[in-house]
Image 1: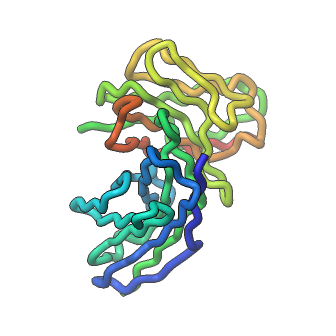
Image 2: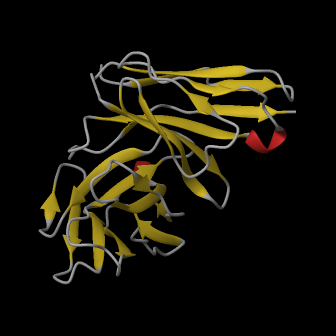
Length: 110
Length: 114
């Protein structure tokens, strides 16, 4: 199963873009990259996912490198409510199994 | 509102006393799963179910049982709880094996076994 590597923590000023990196160098060609976040001890919340093209939705953008070995989640205008742990996850092929790592703790400050 | 509902939210119990944590989803999802979350270890999958009457072990199934008699419900059973099962538990569901929309998680159950 492909593993992901993320920085343990990051800071971001309110209103600025938050760029959260993720390495997944062993990802297979048909494995999707998912991003979730967990605010305090609530249930993780789906943000976005992608296979090889860049994706954007109302919450964030996902940039995947051409070789698919890394990706970046972009929160374009971070708010205090975006303070959370962000998980980059690779979905195991042909299953719905998501393997969570330890994530990046994003702190948005005023 | 589409959601996954877990009960109870908080539970303190004693070693060896059987308990059940319920999970119900109203989205007609085929796939359901249980995770536990412990400090420094992230979320680890306990059991999952691809559909009614189809269940399989995740990464940490020891000490747990599940059942999937109907599509909406996926209870987690601890026959003889032990202190090392003290944890934060999450139930999740998704549309299907071909799901492209991610999981929906419940609000969590914080279990303490003394």
